[in-house]
Image (cartoon, rainbow, N blue to C red; front, side, top):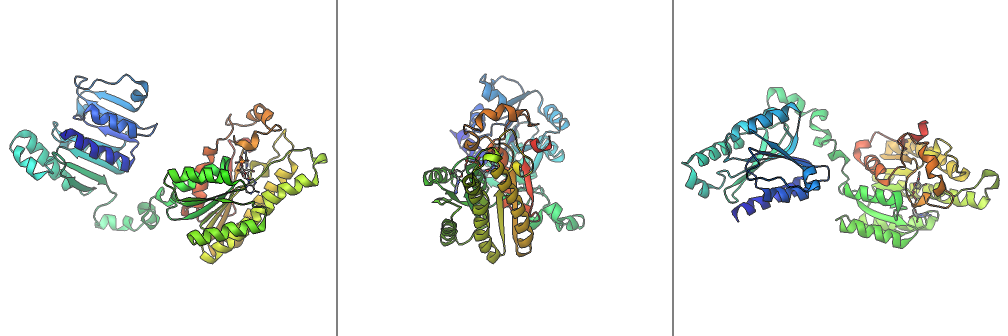
Length: 453
Ligand SMILES: NC(=O)c1ccc[n+]([C@@H]2O[C@H](COP(=O)([O-])OP(=O)(O)OC[C@H]3O[C@@H](n4cnc5c(N)ncnc54)[C@H](O)[C@@H]3O)[C@@H](O)[C@H]2O)c1
């Protein structure tokens, strides 16, 4: 019963801190291991140190074994081995009533085993004054008290004592605790402390930003909507087909992302104006315009009908321009904004064997439009960039004309596979974030190397 309360605290801590690598020193029950295991990402790992397998029999389940790595032996020797391997952890659990906890703690801190912003959770301490009084005179109570004092005096940690059961101390590693003559200089340095005090990963966050994604109802646009939403932005999912936009907005909603679905044909000026006005009425601004909707039609150039040419250009270039202009006007008046257009590798090379003159030409136009707007608007705070994917496995390539070509394309791609929409997600977040503020007019090619062969 008592242990379960501490386990609950540990579990909540893992949920909040979302560590990938955890180190557990002896004293951890297999109950808490099970709880932590479920919370780790697929590629996460818990290293569990035990003196023997006496009380801790490793589970035979293979998924479990992949995440739980057992180290059996003398704790100090195990730690030295992990240090030699250069292992680092996001979270370390120490049981203060075990032997030599202070030695373990010192080794962990002095060898940088705890990552910056990593968390140490020390259990069974005398943080709980009432309980500790009962044991203060026995060896266990004495060690626990000493450990508490060491951690509370540690300048490299920010700590809090929780009087749960026997007491838990939660301590987070911080870069520099107090200003000295030596640290004064580096504390003011943007590279050391992070621009505006934010680490590079924090600078990729989009919290509070307002974004829209056209063609957000499926394929690349859907993945962009999820990525921008996961990074913290509110998302207007815009698609010609309302049901598709609604389905994606619902997915975002159940992930806790603020979202709205809107139907619009971006090749129509009145539709573009309507969605931009609606976003402004609802959310007051537009920070990120992801102009992604596009179509692909195939025909030999000598047979390409003017209708195909016009249809392709109306969506891929004219429609994209309408979106850039409408969102750009808002962003220019705000003095800040990020426009990310979806171009294509077809802007650089002539993908073959498919025949798609109108598509290739329209996408080359997207790149030139991006370069022009990118240079025209940057001094007023608006950055315009584009992403050029290679061949991405989406419904767009599942047409009768394109589907049979997959084998042929695979031989043209150094990466040996088609792109997945998830391959593009980090790029859109980067271009949408303040981390890319000096980048404009750029065509970011993500094609597994295809355009280089
Ligand atoms: N799939 C690829 O291999 C690939 C490669 C390079 C570039 N691209 C580009 O990426 C973008 C997205 O492609 P995808 O593969 O996700 O396509 P997709 O066909 O899977 O999805 C496109 C979405 O856009 C919507 N849409 C189409 N026309 C629209 C319009 N006029 N107004 C509003 N919404 C409209 C569709 O309803 C659909 O939901 C396109 O610009 C495409 O040219 C795709």
